[in-house]
Structure formats: C-alpha cells, structure tokens
Length: 342
View 1 (cartoon, rainbow, N blue to C red):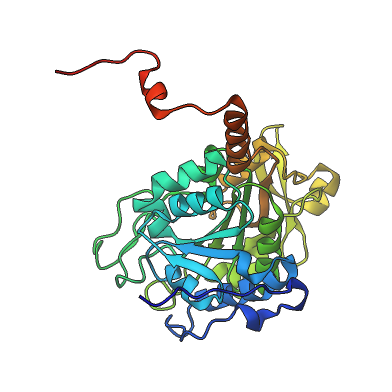
View 2: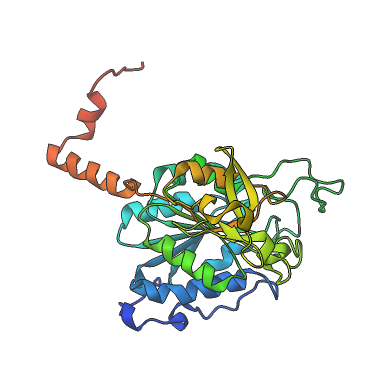
C-alpha cells in the first residue's frame, strides 16, 4: 500500500487561494453555484492565519460533497448524512485542527437529519456549510427536504405534498451557537460569513442558497436578479435597524409590540424599526420563521452566542479522570450492580 500523502508545514502568512486549490478537475455542471462557494472558501482561508496542514474538510454524499477533492487540504468524502459524526471524531482526537463539514440539503436534512441536530446541540468546534439548492441534483432532480410544497419533479409529478424543512429554524431549536445565511452569488457576503464562522468557537452553521441550474434553475432568482433583489433581500447587521428596498425605504417593525411587519420607513420612523441583535434568541427564532411571501429573505449572522464547546468539555473531563488515578477495566465492570449469567 502506498503511503498516505502528507502536507508539510506551511507558513500561514504566505498562503494564497492557489495553495488551497487541488489538481483535481472540478466536475460540477457548468454554471453550478458550487463553483462560487468553492472559490470563496479558497479565497477566505488564507486570511485565517491557519497552516494549510491543519485544515480538514469532511463531506457526506451529493454534488456538494465532492468539495474535499477540490481543496488542497486533508479531507474525507465520507458516508451519506454522517459527516458531522466523522468530523466530531476528528475534532475530539485533534482539537488543534480546523474542521469543516460540507453538506447539501438532501444529505444533511434527510438521512443525516439526526446528525445535524446533535452536532448543533453539542456545540462541537467545527464549521458546517449547508449548500441548499432545494433539490436532489446528483440523482437527477428529485424533490428534497427543503423543496417547496407543490414542487413538481420526476419523483413528484403531481407536486410534492411534503412541507419543507426550515434549516435555520432547526439549527436554532437545537441550540446552535452560530447561525448564518448567505447566497452563492453574493461573493463578498459569502466570504464574510465564512470568516465569521471560522472565528466562532463552537458549531458554526452557514446555510448557503445555491442555484442548481440544471434541475432547479432560478429557485432563488428574486434574491439574485438585479431588478428584484433589493425588494426581496435584507442584509442583517448587528446593532443596525432592519431596512431594505431599492431606496432603503422599507423596514421591519414590531406592530402592537409583538407582531413583526414590513413598514414604510418614512411614515413609521427609523427609530421604531427592529434593531438586529445577534445574541437575542427571541429575535433569531422570530426571524427564522419569516415567510418569503410576506417578508424579505434575511442574509447575514442571524444568531451568535458563546457557550462551552463539546471538545473543550470533553478534554476537561479526561483531565479530571486522569487526576483521579488509574483504574482497571475489571474494576470498572465490577463496580455497582452486576450479574453473572449462567
């Protein structure tokens, strides 16, 4: 067996996008939104001051999950929906590594739904990027867990009767400590979310709206086309009032103290608009339930709070166990209630 490739030590101050680009041919469909996400990750990593040999990219199964092949780092194209579990093991064994999970809406929210929930609640120190194109692309266009109700596909010729999963709402319900959303065509915004996620200690979740131009083309067109995006897209910024529109003339306000609504800023007054607070769980949960037909789509950091990470708590427990002294497996088995089966 040939020896495994080893990345020699690299000076992070000298790294560039080219250092993170592998020699593999990228095999996504021409025009796929995955190209932009890959490019923004490769552009952003050199800014994080981490040696290249300390990065690991783990994926499940799907179009997006070919990602590790195209990164000139360590990586693993792993099992359908189980990338969070494998990434958790890597981080537990090597807390010094920067571990990234790359997954799609089908991979992470269908077969991998359970793993998605538990990595969020455990707060393992890793980054999870969910490429959401609202379709199964690699298997030629079946509806996915995030497809809208009524979606006509090869597997739902009369329209899907399933209600779609809301990834951000699920992450928040699982007590995720960092939740953000961005879009493949917003390169600078995508880069800023990647950087924020990398700087967060704990599980960082980024939902990336990503166009599948073959099987679900235009799913996010109102958010990406020049003529419509200003009226459909709101950029969240911590500490700033929520405004949007071609002339920033619309905003989000609480009507009657508890009901969010889109208002005209001039008549309502900017001072009465809702101010975004990344640390407010109440605001995050409310924003996660915004429906696109009634509210703009929100991109940016929706929620960010600090909480001890799973790996740091596990390391502390191991330290305490070592301080208690050595014990034998037999002594452990004999401790407490035990039975001898004959």
